[in-house]
Amino acid sequence: MAGFLARRFLGFVATLLATAIIVFVALEILPGDPAAVMLGVTATPETIAALRTDLGLDQPAVLRFFLWLKGLATADLGESYAYRVPVAGLIGERLAVTLPLTLMAMGLSTAIGIPIGTYAASKAGKLADRLAMGLAELVLSIPNFWFGILFVLLFAVTLNWLPAGGFPGWEVGFGPAFAALLLPAVALALPQAAIIARLTRSSVLEALAEDWVLTARSKGLSRRATLYRHVLRNALVPVVTILGLQFSYLIAGTILIENVFSLPGLGRLIFQAIGQHDIIVVKDLVVLFAGLVVAVNFAVDLLYGIIDPRLKRERRR
Image 1 (cartoon, rainbow, N blue to C red):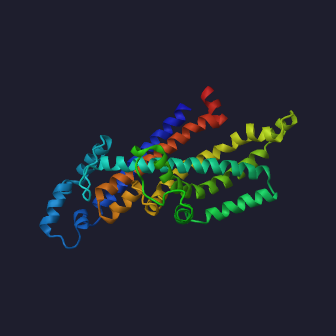
Image 2 (cartoon, rainbow, N blue to C red):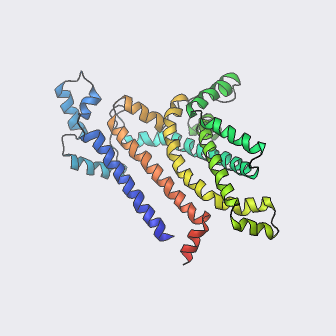
């Protein structure tokens, strides 16, 4: 188990380093002057030269890269060109919106998808199974931002139950902040819940066909007890795998959802930074997103040790 996790950790570190190299090369080394892009076509050569000096673009590329890595390691991310504030503080403020939103969406997608997929598998071939999987197909075909627009029209404009957008801040209380994130979280979660439901159904049906299920039933266990005590735990291994991948989709989905609901999160920040040619913010955010995805995938690997009995046997040996 320890060796498995060590290998995965080294792989994740290598992935993060490769991401940093690709981002740096794409934004600062490929043809094109970042300073000229940020200032626009009307900028004078003197202004461009001053900005290049301010951004450190007049230094060798290798030196700039290692200085940037050092800044990432020490949380010294530089200063945003558009906002004229430290990037670390800017990201910290926006992370307080995006991270809870993503975790809420991930929790909702899991809480919805696994029970529906398990129930559909228990009713395989029956009307309930076909209805559940048909609904999953329908939900999967609708983009999450379209769900967001529909939710705003229904729950905010028509019923006036929840706010249509904006974020009041956690300092005003948990209730108002939670209410502001609920609709975007559900909009993000529904397509991912449909994926989890389909995968859970397939995995449960595959586990139900194993010989040990027949052995458990022959010893007197009911179908329900066999399903929820034994089959589901074995079937969750591939589902846990998809959860790590879903986190990256949810992070990407926040770029659209946060703009639909006017949420001041990282998704909206990177969208604005791209439009404002704030390359420093874009560069740091891409690496941060990659780091979050790497961290979640590492946490998923830790869950394998709890869910998958084969890793437990390997650890005992």
